[in-house]
Image (cartoon, rainbow over all chains, first blue to last red; front, side, top):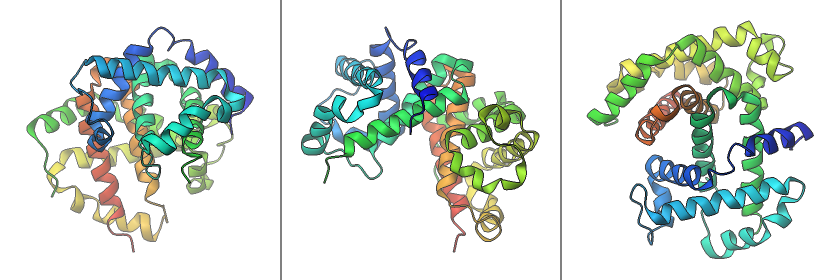
Length: 143
Length: 147
């Protein structure tokens, strides 16, 4: 459950991501594809080489979507409703060991490596709760 | 037996060479207890774990974190023999400590994040790959003797 303090931290910290959606987003995806090769199975249509336009643009898209979620922490279900439909009916990314958890780990790594000490345990925890809530919302309509 | 490429071994050794075991160990354990508070169930005797500040400052957490990461160093030194390196610890975690092996995975992921925060850009995707592989192998070895 996101506390008021968690929400504050998330909003505060998201300021540091703004302006870097494409860079951070593509790094997250790259790390995910390299660390968890099974996630590549969802992107057979992509050029997955380092720095590819598709990775950059998709990374930006993912981070922008997260940014929208950050603006709607009190109503993730509604904010993510369309994405939730997309993941359930169209993309059908495996929800059990949700590739989203793997994406989440890579997010933490990117943020930690860019923010260093600023990525305090409290920020890490708040963000982890946020990502779990996003993943749960995206998986809501699977069955 | 796990196969490690020369590059993976190099990446693991290079990062490990720069790790302050006491600091990183303490930080990793503290983060585990903060980010996944249910893991505090194993540390009832550690005293004050009531807030992130309390956890980070708790001397037992620091000491135990150092112990855990020191033991992790054994894996780094014995990459070709991780299974037998952790056989006894695996039995201990099952029979005496009663720790759900899922927790090994959680701690492994947290350790990666701690390394990333300490090494910044130097913790490249290739580094992350090698280290995620390592923490996965260690977690697996620790779960191996469960019955």
